[in-house]
Image 1: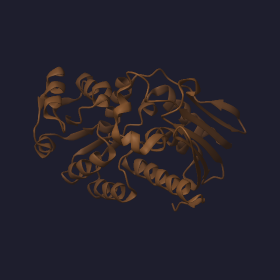
Image 2 (image 1 turned 180 degrees about the vertical axis):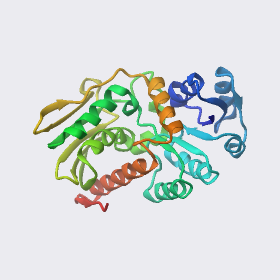
Image 3 (image 1 turned 135 degrees about the horizontal axis):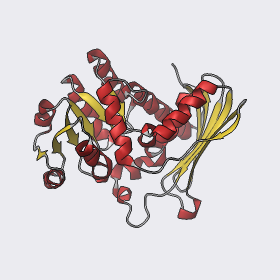
Length: 294
């Protein structure tokens, strides 16, 4: 499958470009970026071609992999979908629910294969655990703490303008939701409170009645950082495994899903995550509980 990569930032370097270059069923056709010099450097590093025009790269491929901020990703992905290209997107898929809905409509209209890269969700250990937890059922609650900092020395993501503006809710919130939704079901009600250090606390009621509590931040003191998740219910308390951080391997599995044409982590799922994040933002702003329609 011919792939074009859109984006030249840290995540493109860490996951997308090496993942595409290493995949045996991928022809890494080219790279486009907002900085042509960075696009040329990344393309040269992986033995492919730098494109000066995004539309030309879309025209030359079967699928696009996008490693760009949500506000840049969404219109590019929409153009690619309307051209009939398969989509491998980053989270969140779009900065607004309207932009996400437009993308979902284009994908559904053309019956396109799509995947949203919720990194560790594509590692077999975590995928198998969540499938087993969903099959077990009987859960009454979940807790996810996804708390850290991107502003420590040497962290390339601290320079990301959209992360500085949107914070942990939109950056790590999607990863937390990607853990609880497959096990507890859709979210029907959201409460939220924001505290110092970009700390967002969410309480979510799920369709089956269970409640999950999410604590999210990308700006805490290093000593406060933690990444933990548990489910509790009739089967007891189950700690979610934390597989070794291996974004290239995870990305390879995401490509596998796109080629196979089936993934639970598709654009429709990514759109629902965007809707929940927007509802959480509203709940925090208004200090009211927000109801979500199905």
